[in-house]
Image (tube, rainbow, N blue to C red; front, side):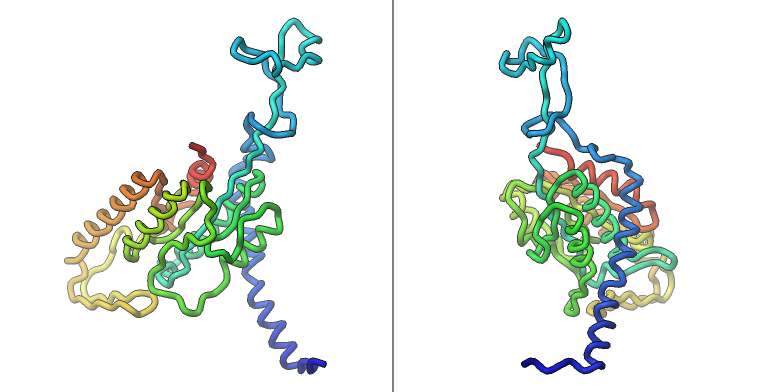
Length: 297
């Protein structure tokens, strides 16, 4: 027989479990509130197509085949009607949210880039799941599925702490389904060659999607002057200068080049890209994300 855990072990296990679960309700509540601002309703993604559920009647057109006419409905009027069914071919969406230490950066009074990225990812997952889509996380930790329980799996996956975090992250495309859609959320401040490789491999699988670059306002404005010590969140990079203001123009030029390269990568691979600031409201970014992932080509 297995030994009975001591009260200390049970207490430690319970405390650890509670600490792990504590962020889940807050993240889900915030994401639910954000998603509710979209007011999409239960049928926000409905469209005609192949399926089993009735959607609507419409007047027949000259191009419609006779076999498509609903003769019972048409018999009640002088017009022929087509019985349309709801489009039900659910798509699969895989989400990657950068968990690197650079995402922990936040200006005073603002959420971190990681918190905003998780919030937007959860909110769009809620909208997609309610629309009948399969949603999951890349990396094979949370495979795409439907249903409300999947929200808990996604939230737990997003909040799982990785002790061996790098300074900067790179998209993980493991587990992405061919000819599906994907969302990559990051500050994209690390080597872009890794982003290029991930997008190219995804595009080769017929995957289309969206890049959401999340930046803090300080990273856009570079409001530093005089003696300043710049250090990465993980401490791997460090630079001290006596004239930070003199670096502003070079920094802004490099940032503009990085954004332009992201735009080029998105255009070449058929993806879309948006830069979102943590100092801005999340609603506009969520609306953009939903439209980008909803679009079918």
